[in-house]
Amino acid sequence: MRKKPAQSVLTREDLERYDRQIRYDGFGEEGQEKLKTSHVIVAGAGGLGCPASTYLACAGVGRITIIDDGIVDLSNLNRQILHWQEDIGQKKVASATAKLARLNPSVQILPKATRITRRNATRLIKGANVVIDAMDNFEARAILNQACVSEGIPFIHGGVWGLCGQVTTIIPGETPCLECIYPEKPVDQGVFPVFGVTPGLIAMIQAVEAIKIIAGFGRLLAGQMLYINEANMDFCLRELIKNPNCPVCGGMKGG
Amino acid sequence: MKSFFHLDVSKAFGSDHIELADDRATLRTVLQEVMRKGNGKIEVIDPATGKIDVDYFVLLNRRESQTLPQGLGTELHEGDEVAIGMMHYWGGG
Figure (tube, rainbow over the protein chains, first blue to last red):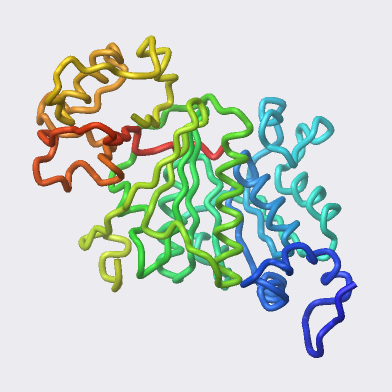
């Protein structure tokens, strides 16, 4: 067992639980301490939110707020891995919180069974280190993008369809925001096809982006969109362009 | 070619690659062939403007096609990589 350093926020159990990642060069106990004292918002407890919050909890993010007003349905279970057969009819945030608390009792899970609106968005995310976009609609993403930009909170966007997915990290004042990338509301296509592995893969990338932001190491997907097509295993990075006249982030420096 | 579409492109194309008869193919030639093989399912070029449709992105060797000096008229060479796909996947799963 690793020796506990003086004045560390890490307990002996932490040092053992996170031993394998603490050994990673450039992360270490300092990185683990940063995770332990951090707060991540996972907006959505579905196909993206379940795996993202699972890996953040495993990694030792001290506080994770999960926001979702949905109820577990049978058709969710091919991909929303924190919701099980016995949870059908339960609130998604309750189901997710129960599993995560058992997975890692040393992290605090804060469930918020609410819909993200223009009125509550800023209040919900205030003080967080990172917000993970695990939502399923354009409107909520646009609201959260605006709130993150105004609060200066990194926002990790992810989206999926079938076997395709995309992910980018938005750093307010530095990178294009979601409004720069998508100035127009896309057509709502209703229920869409999705394999569980697709949001799983995108959510893993979102989770590692959050960990790197908090611990301060590695290179981020900042200003770049990673597109993935698992049907033919195509991966590509696309440079994103900041809109100087963006109504959300246009007045901020950088880009 | 890399593709990022909702649909299974190999099924839509009946193949996982595209052959071009023209030795001096341009980006536009390739995209027109993609559209032809897609049977109307992939409208990469907006017929009204002749430019890339707003719902799509096209990269040549990882560079945004709109930033190429010759645009869609850029000639392709052996080994060039063209990536095309939909701009957005909004599902959260």
